[in-house]
Amino acid sequence: MAMATFAAGCFWGVEAAFRRVAGVIGAMVGYTGGNRTNPTYEDVCTGMTGHAEAVQLEYDPAKVSYEALLEVFWGMHDPTTLNRQGPDVGTQYRSAIFYHTPAQADAARLSRDREQGRHRRTIVTEIVPAEEFFRAEEYHQRYLEKRGAPHCGI
Image (cartoon, rainbow, N blue to C red; front, side):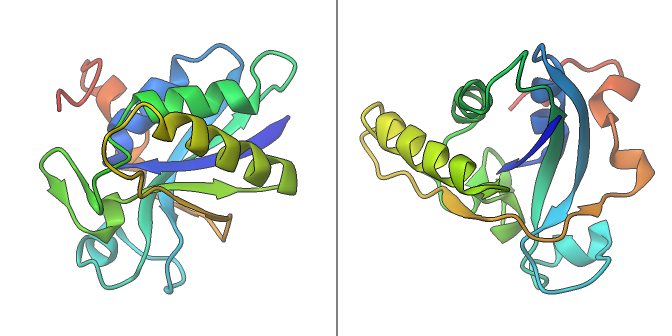
């Protein structure tokens, strides 16, 4: 098994999209990339912790490649909007790829460069080393699934 971590706006929709990918074993929403240990949702919403709402995946590389996960990531959000996705605004909603290995970093950069050709505006997605990931509160896990919603509707 391997790990991958992505931020692409509100983590509810990101989690739901990745859970539909064959080969993704598990997905957990949480916070990463910030400066506070064990932040809460309320902390992160202030925009003062530096954390992004993110999804950490466990996946089977024999069933889905990291490159395929990157394609899903690019397709689920607008990587050209800085600190914003739909109605959600703030650094916690930034677009970011948190890589776990040098190979993931290389794949993410190559993927970003290919994706740039599909956009008129510059991609602002951060590609940075994975940091400590803090699991979000239980009510955020599988949030859309618990409510019978297929997606956020943004």
